[in-house]
Image 1: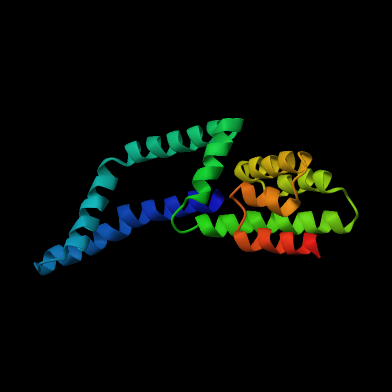
Image 2: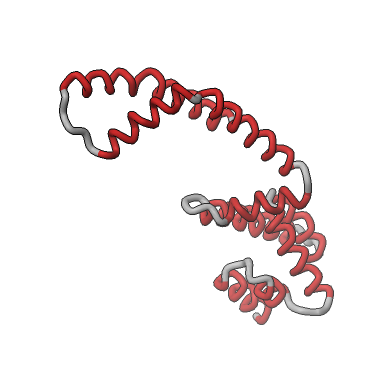
Length: 171
């Protein structure tokens, strides 16, 4: 959050100080500018004129994010949106999956029963979607299904992982 905040400050300085300097240079040269450059200059002017609106919207977004993040339903929605992000969704998914599976592996090696180990491992993900899927798998295991089949039925865990678990269970 600190890095995000600082990046917005840097963006604000760039749009209000640096871009106008370049705009003066290009205007004095009286040349035709590309559309992207014209848009950047327009955006800089809008940023300088409506900086207070951007500040209010930024504060409101931060406030509502924190408010939603403090409720169970809001946290679930935020975590599910994080997994759908265009650039970082797969990275976040891989990170929470590896944390959960690694924790589960360590807990099972210590001799903890699978249901207890899954309860502890799901919390290591720090993601409500993963927690819910682990809870669904746990309920299926209580009904007598195998670990691999239970995880596969949640359709959240990758197929290769559930197949490896099923192979390990049969051997």
